[in-house]
Structure formats: C-alpha cells, structure tokens
Amino acid sequence: MWAKFSLSSEDMHLTTEVNVFYFRVMNDWVNAFEQKGWIELRDFLPLDSSQGLLEEMKLVQSKEDFHRASIGKDGDKHINLSQRGDFISWIDPINAMPYTSKYIVEISHIISILNRQFYLGIRDYECHYAHYPIGAFYKRHSDRHAKGSSRVVSSVFYLNADWQEGDGGELVIYDGESNASLIKPQLGSLILFLSEIEHEVLPTHRERKSITGWMLNETIL
Image 1: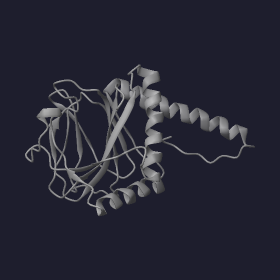
Image 2 (image 1 turned 90 degrees about the horizontal axis):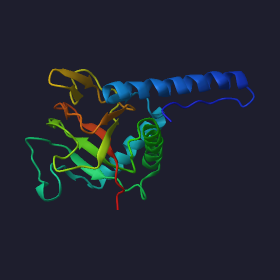
Image 3 (image 1 turned 60 degrees about the horizontal axis):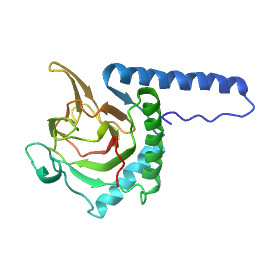
Image 4 (image 1 turned 90 degrees about the vertical axis):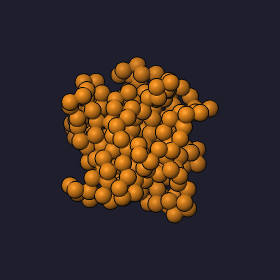
C-alpha cells in the first residue's frame, strides 16, 4: 500500500525477503504512531500516482469548484480569514476521478490497520482537495470540535513537487506546549495524526496543494 514491489512468482526466496521487509516497515510506522500519535509516510504512493492526483486536482480547480474554507461546526460555521486562508473542494468518493479513487482505496487499507492495531472504531472517511494560495496559513487548532466530533485520525497527502526550504507552508504538529515537529509538504508524503492533536500550517510562499481527510467513528449518511 505505501510500498509497491514487482516480483517474479518463481523467485520464492526474494518474495520471502520482501514480505519480511514489508511487515517490518508496517510495524515501524504502527509503533511510531502509537508512541507519538502521528507519523509521516514518505512516498506513500508511486510517483506517477501522486502526479496523477495533482493533475486531477488541477482539473477541479480549472472548473472553479473550490470555495473558501470555514471554521466551526453546524450553526457556528463561519469564515475567519485571520484563522485560515485556504480554499477547498470536497471529494465525492462515488464519483471520484481514477487516481483519487485509488488513493481512497489505499487509505481504506490504512484504516483497516489502525482499527486492527488500536481498536479505534473508524467507520468512514471524508476528504477534500485543499489549495493554499501564496500567503495563506491555518493557525494552531485541533480537528476535533469543542462541541463534539466524530473525527478520530486526520490525514494529509501532499501534492507539491520540489518543495524547497524557504517555500513555507510546513505543517507544525505540537506535542504539549514546548515541543513541535515541522513537516515539509513534499509530493507523495502522507501524514497521519490523532485529530485531537493541535497543529497548524505556516504561511506559504508558493501555492500549496494537498488532500486533507478525516477518519470518522460514525458513518457519513
């Protein structure tokens, strides 16, 4: 799922070695997620798939099917440009384009692992394309709303090729008041973190694109 192998069915010795490596990699990120509450999976998809996702997002943008993101929930939902400045387009999994549909399938494998390992009770997944124009940011916040939330695990998959130091737009994940981890929004990286963890997106100095999603403990009707 986050690693792809092309093997000859006749080479059983190589197959055994790859299986051992595959499960070791899985155990590594599962253990890290348990310890920290978040994990970065680099090269989650093959390069051509990541590029295909980027092209699909650009196609949606060309149709102007994006709107300003809001904060809050239900009757409290409102736009606050001092808090966040990104634009989003929600993804319908039933009618998703091919690469986006495959991405959702890969996320479902991750959900199965998380449920099996941590009994999180995840039952559904929602996601949107996110576009941060130059200068946009999202100040420190948690993805779980104060009045209750079905969000259990948040995910961000980055669609930015050749991101350089100085481009900004890093994701900051906070561990308490003093510790923070800075993550570059590089093409192909998937970030998973518990939705209760506070985080922010620093001001970006070039356009920043991603697929942002939430694993839910309720089914979307």
